[in-house]
Image 1 (cartoon, rainbow, N blue to C red):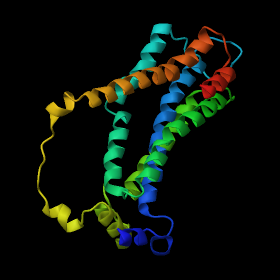
Image 2: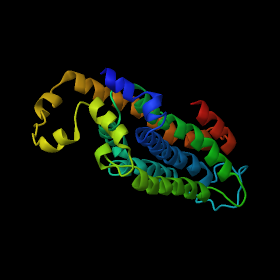
Image 3: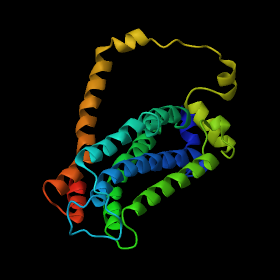
Length: 250
């Protein structure tokens, strides 16, 4: 254990390694996914002429209330096969990349991308939607372009494990593997397959408590994110800038 701590010192590994790059890119993955999620719920206010005070050069779509709710909910149906896998994938990624001594710092940093993406998306979408020559379509180009750049960067600079990374130093790779208690030869030589205890999982009260708690938290959180901008515009008659301001307060 003492040797592992020495390996992580500034003198040997420096203050930045590829495991930090993985954490940073994971942060941006979460941030962009939440920015795209929040952006749609806010931009849909600019798409429909509920308040004529926010005129732009963009075309108003004039969707009905049912149409708006269908569009907002469709994002979460697509979440099942797209962005919904981000958190489970990050759990597996950090179990392979982040030493146990550093998980308390790097993992929360990556997960904080959700709050960061939510906070920055609202003012950016509001500003672009009310800007002449840009309008609400520009928000989709912006966050879609950022997502595309992230994908290219991930392909070039990331990998599923330190063993598969092209440019990681031998010293950092050994540090990560020793910290996790497994060497490269041991990982390749072990072929044991442990069966998943599905019965014990689905009959566990703590598991169900976590499931119910997450369902309740996400129900309220997603309802506020998706429905509040539309409600404040169509019912309370707030303009777009006021919706952005209130949304950030929420």
